[in-house]
Length: 220
Ligand code: HEM
Image 1 (cartoon, rainbow, N blue to C red):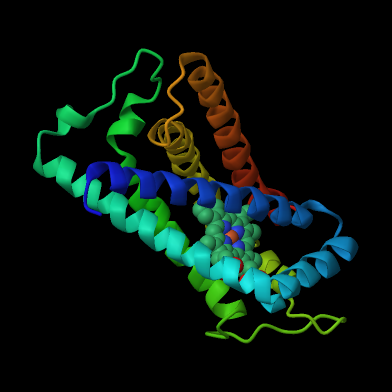
Image 2 (tube, rainbow, N blue to C red; image 1 turned 45 degrees about the vertical axis):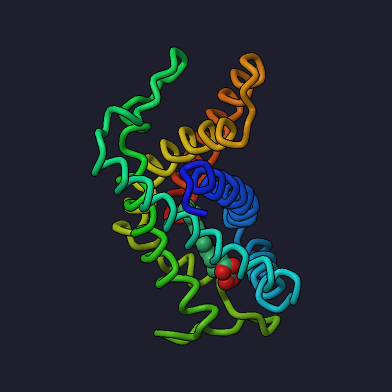
């Protein structure tokens, strides 16, 4: 349970699950790019389905557990590496193009964790837990999550915050996904090269997607 292999496997498996969540989350948030008369109903109906479906509720608990486990074991490994000789654990493959990122995954992870806390406080806590300003209902009787998002992304500071955070997010996803593939045993050289490209494309799509949506909503 405490071996480095076990910890790395948990980080890799939970990380891959979080990567899948982000694909779904970005796809859903692309609804915000549609004209308002379609986007509002679609976004609010989607959000209601997520909150009310028993199956998705279970997936949501798995998601929270994945975030906690990923953070816990990643912090454990980072602290252990800091205590020991840091350079001992630096992976230095010839095709490694993000040495700074690989050495600072813990730090970047903490920045993303802080972002998630702020993000959940603004959306999830208000919408799901009913904490803070009450969320109004739309014409169909669904919680107007579109309005919450629209209002937040009409504050330029939030827009800049979301856009800036997409940079460490992309760096973390690029290196994290590559490392997860390695940790889970995809060692074959050609396969690894392909997976490295997949990781890069994935990270770019996530970074650009999450970074650009707040700006487009701002100018809507
Ligand atoms: C354009 C950027 C984003 C927008 C507009 C957005 C919007 C939202 C909204 C509206 C919710 C609440 C959903 C609901 O309960 O109905 C939510 C939840 C959440 N978001 Fe985001 N999000 C964005 C980016 C991100 C990013 C980059 C991450 C992670 C790095 C993230 C992680 C989460 C998590 C973990 C939840 C809780 C999921 C749940 O309980 O179902 N979001 N987001």
